[in-house]
Image (cartoon, rainbow, N blue to C red; front, side, top):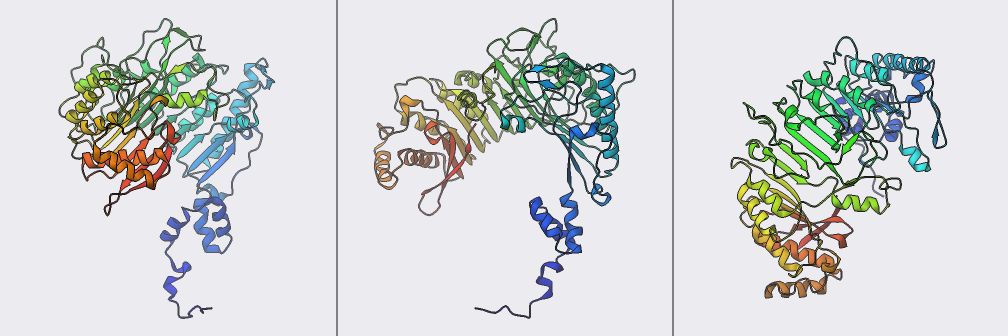
Length: 562
């Protein structure tokens, strides 16, 4: 066995690395490995402590206790992210499936004020704290198959977090305020929240039960408008978002806005057009509107009617002296409408556009199968209708000629206008580099499957800068990829298909590889990869990369496409 030389340079040993290098290395370690490394020597302990205690977790139930265990003083100076897990202790526990009557308001306020006071003490003991995350408490209950308690975050606790002087980011991954919680009173003086830069309220997409209620709407009306002067990132559920109040505020620093949920037609309330508050966001760069299409009566008692997602800039909206959204770079719109004025006013700065359904049509089908969401899908009142390709063609025709879009995603229903849509895309976006097409073909067509794909490739021939194509083929079961998929194709293609059939036993794989080869051949050598998916690939993307030596494609299976 070879011996280790003794004359090893001291500079090559682990202990002679600079502290900056070691800090970078330990940032990639799992906390369990960090804990072990910190026990090796004093220097490693000093290096590992900032990474070990950068995130602290506290059970929300403990905040209402008389005493709260605190971290060691040395660790408190390292905490930058504080997580609140579990349920906040509330005085109305559940008994089976029946909720007990709520306790008197005085008892509730005492418990909530104690939790807020303890949390305030904890936050002030962490001088470098920047982020507070209120995590979802439902995972453990879903794993046990039990109904979780349905409670929100106490209002006093919210105020402690928002008014903390050093906190810059707040993330809520659960119900912020429940319909049974007390509606807070409007303060005599307006709230002053000058330091929050990011507020993300992200609810589970497929949650059941009432989605819109007065209690949470009242809370959001109090806390969202005061964020206008400082916030740069804002994520909100549409059901309770204070759109009218947002339209009365200025948002000079906001760069990212995401709205997700149902569009509500509230009884006795005139809906606020989205453009009325978007026009007050002069520096908005990223806009994501995931508005679900409600197809049957939802559970909310506040709804007066069922309406499709509205236009962002309706024709009934008053004219504006200055064009809005002139800094926009990324735009995502679900269920786009032809009668939206927005399409003709998009700025030259726009680079990334997604026009799709939300949720993806396939994701709702997957949900209905009950495979990963056993409690969801029964009361969900959403649909994801496919947008006809002719409708998308109308929308893209309305775009300004000065748009320099480089990334585009389209989800649509194929019909006799698909070639027109793709030719419009090639003419409207000559600088396009990355294209995603989610084709949905539910009818029995007369053309062979190969004809559909060759038409797509030929329609995109004019995009000389295109680097990647990602396409969900969308063939239904009657037109599934098989040995006859290339009947009627050019003779050289059929010859190549016969040769590949001998090398690859999986029919779907060699068929998809042949489709990828055609895209590379038609669109040119600039193509870096082609991602393809259809129902036979278990709804996963398969990536094919051209090989410069012999044009063989290297297969690479990716995550589910929806």
